[in-house]
Length: 164
Image 1 (cartoon, rainbow, N blue to C red):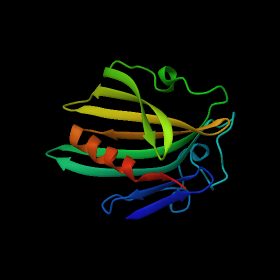
Image 2: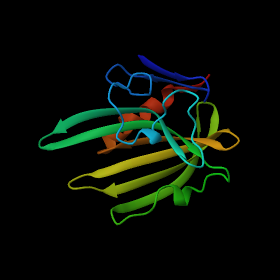
Image 3: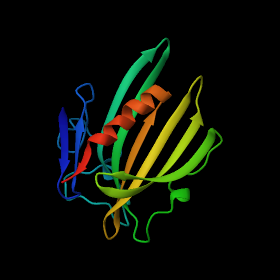
């Protein structure tokens, strides 16, 4: 397993062997939007830059001419007044389903939003988990897939996220 650790945020993720991940310490290329990506572990979101991508992992699969993918991403959010799930991800015309729930992620009580969107020839499944780690900082764990199988593959990584 490949491991991502962020002691400042108190999380560790063990990625399955087929999944590679990127974070500030192993990113070779320059981000097209550098202020949205963390540049070191202490680079936190703020009122000027309210989101910082901590770690991203993408798994790609080909099915005929369609490239299916699974995505697992953790983002730090500056939300001094808390999280409003309805406004975190705006509703768009491709959305066919949205529901809310709670779960435990890395020994933290997390709220989630599950969204299904119609793509061209497929349904994209996405679930976003949110939990507070510091007074004004929340973590968002985004899990998505271009098919139910790809979504479940990314969702399985959630079981390898733990508090440190």
